Image 1 (cartoon, one colour):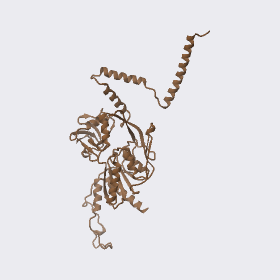
Image 2 (cartoon, rainbow, N blue to C red):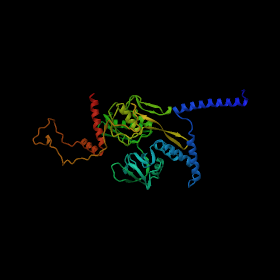
Image 3 (cartoon, rainbow, N blue to C red):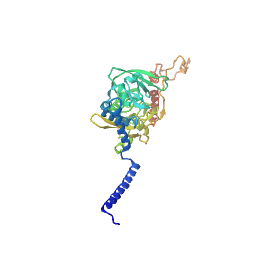
Image 4 (cartoon, rainbow, N blue to C red):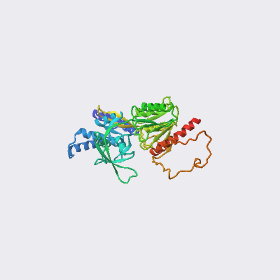
Length: 437
């Protein structure tokens, strides 16, 4: 039976649609195997419905801009603790923070189980002076419970006019009851690098935060220490305890100052631009003198990069407790002139391929932060040969009977900062071994 033109047209269209459908299914199947690029229409419909219900029925009128911005914040908060939407105020604070001068309490914080966890208090800031410690869990800000707040909301509440007080209620491991701290806000001026000579030939550098000028400040500090010690250091202690991190480039440059060659750190992510390798250039500012790095649970991010790099290259001995484990890369993606997206785009890896994320750096020598007190000489004073009557002299021209001021310094260091005292002992041992080789 002959087909009419209409029948032929219908058959042709059906064949074209059938081929298109099969082709489309093949494309969608390929996408689902790799990465689905199709829009989730049902979920978008639900989002639109929720948006409309809020506009129609919520007890108070909410403008579209607020709803959309809150939706973006919620979307990012569901990813990880470090991704965030930066509104104009938060974006401004981020840019100020990397310069080393900003307002607030002086603590690096993160979100954990709906509460604010203190990553580390920054040196010489109101929080540190008040007694806030790494690991503290903030449950109230003044009279307001933290539960239910976003991290940005909590940070905003903690910020305020310098000179005003704030009460933080915290839970601390080992304490049966919550603790309350009244802290006076101030303009925070962070001096990221401090240095001093511990004993002749042995230098100490404290890095409290990695800022844009930290690497050059570390090099200047080493030059000063060399001048104080006849032009050469027998060894160096690099103190990164309670260092919450900071600028990646600063961590790379500080590591490079002590390394001759090799990878310092590399990053891996889904985007090709997130795959980077940072390598050391020739030249060791310490001429291979031994290094001991002090870390603890408040050492995070950039300080973990430095510790991991020098540990993997066997350039330093890491002493202390396991670090925080913040091994992810956040990229700042500007959205407008005043807003931006802080998005986690990659993970950090040490030169040997270890991921820092949620693992941290395990010290070569585990050492908890304990306090010791000086013993009372009257309680135990052992008898020595020199105490015996008519003891023989040692044959030297003159017997040394004066007190040793260096011994007093050791005792003082042991009571003030026991981990540093042990690190110095280790450093001296490494220096002796290096001199004999």
